[in-house]
Amino acid sequence: MTIETERLRDRVAADMIRARERTTLLTEAVDDGDLIRQHSALMSPLVWDLAHVGSQEELWLVRDVGGREPVRPDIDELYDAFKHTRADRPALPLLSPAEARRYVAQVRDKALDVLEAARLEGRRLTVDGFAFGMIVQHEQQHDETMLATHQLRVGAPVLTAPPPPAVSSPVTGEVLVPGGPFDMGTDTEAWALDNERPAHRIDVPAYYIDRAAVTNAQYAAFIAAGGYDDPRWWSPAGWDHRQAAGLTAPLHWRRDGDGWVATSFGRTAPIVAGEPVVHVCYHEAEAYAAWAGKRLPTEAEWEKAARYDPATGRSRRFPWGDETPDNRHANLGQQHLRPAAAGAFPDGASPLGVHQLIGDVWEWTSTDFAGYPGFAPFPYREYSEVFFGPDYKTLRGGSFGTDRSAIRGTFRNWDYPIRRQIFSGFRLARDASPDAARDA
Ligand SMILES: [Fe+2]
Image 1 (cartoon, helix red, strand yellow):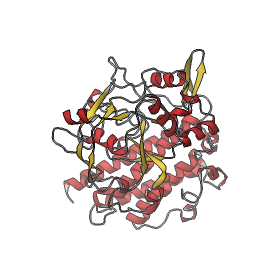
Image 2 (image 1 turned 30 degrees about the vertical axis):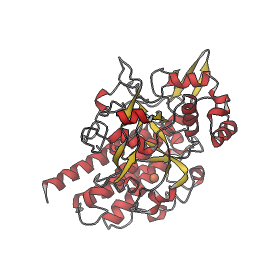
Image 3 (image 1 turned 120 degrees about the vertical axis):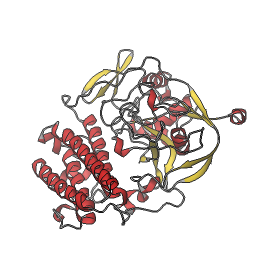
Image 4 (image 1 turned 45 degrees about the horizontal axis):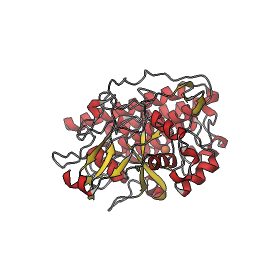
């Protein structure tokens, strides 16, 4: 066994343990009643997420990679996300909180055992620990979903975290991204999922992109200007939704005198002017962009801004380079319970000076979720392919609730354009005039 393989094993085990610590924190912060309750029809009961995390780990690591006997074959169907909608899950005969905790611990013991013995080569599922990476990302994604459930929960606050770093000089304005070829997607990122593959060269014409995400103060100006009452700024589908859902402000905002307060994990406080707006749907983002005289970036424009190194023409793993994120680079991993103002992570900026593409808020792009040229489903069609099409928009970059193991410059998230219980915001782009493009 090589030192490389040993190192990979250690890193995988550390990532699995970190994910489980977070799952434990999120599920022990509330009592059993809150674990079983459905806090919103959009979300599963927390206890479903908990046992579902264990169930996926059992299917992929214990049974498939390890070839071991099933732990609980009788519950496979209950925790199959494709068999039951979130709204239907509370009525299922789910494991109790105590049973679910016992089950995930039992599966984890076996999965770590499998990791000890697994050859992390040969079969595509195990090369570079892919299946373990997939399961780590899956757990962290459910942790972010559970964090969103916490945000929808009503009751006394149970989560705490220090505020994000303060900013002395705010980042504003836009940068010109030169036109030309750019390598989008990846063939080399070991834990990249099927929808991030393969790498492919595309030509992206020159464009401007904002150095920072749209802030609460900017968004409040859109509201004050009557943006929610003027169909000119909204797409037909967006205006229909705005009318039907009665949208008047981001989710969790409430008027307070002349200003706005927002409720965040059970605490209500005035909105912070310079922080990115969060909990807006695609339609709201699109309407704001039209009002501001700009547009949302395409997914390719977002990724080029995040990865393109103009000095070498190479695509990086992250805006700052190839290093895995730490707390100098980005607001990730629930270290803070809200997005940070632009300028809080200068070490995370791109070579062109675009800030905080990674972390803080998921950023809506104008692109429908689809496979890249040469896409091949792996390890199963339900991972991504069944979601391809015009129903979903892609979001990029991760939020303050996304773990570092579940984000990279190529990572793609997708959701319905009406969703806003997720930690979603946006930044703006615009076309570059032919003159600007030539001078670039
Ligand atoms: Fe899942």
